[in-house]
Length: 134
Image (cartoon, rainbow, N blue to C red; front, top):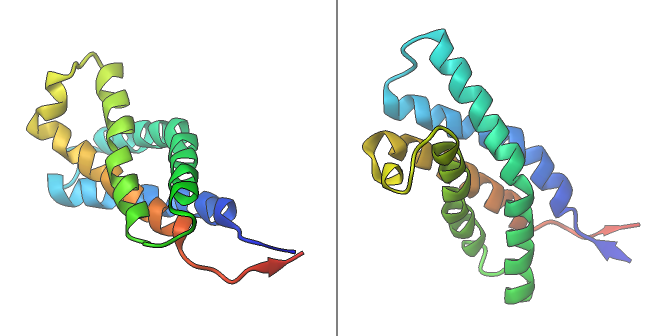
């Protein structure tokens, strides 16, 4: 009996996605003003990602069942990028922001960070692999 390993790929992609998202964040913002800023973004983005990873995985599973497979592949990264608004909003609301703050230019950096995370996780989840017999 063959099976795919999307969960393993998804778990392995989490740190890659987090690093890529943080790289985009710092590239767009011009780099951290201090080491404290870098540590703050690294810590809170990792916590938000850890809390939202099950949501990403479940949503990708629903998309796979709805489509009846992994085609078209591009749907998964698009869904992941849109789901990136969830951890971004979570951080905004946690630090006292509201719905209006989600539209602030500074919040765009967080949207980009988690948008990239969603793209990477979407590709990792749906990337075609050969079935493994076991």
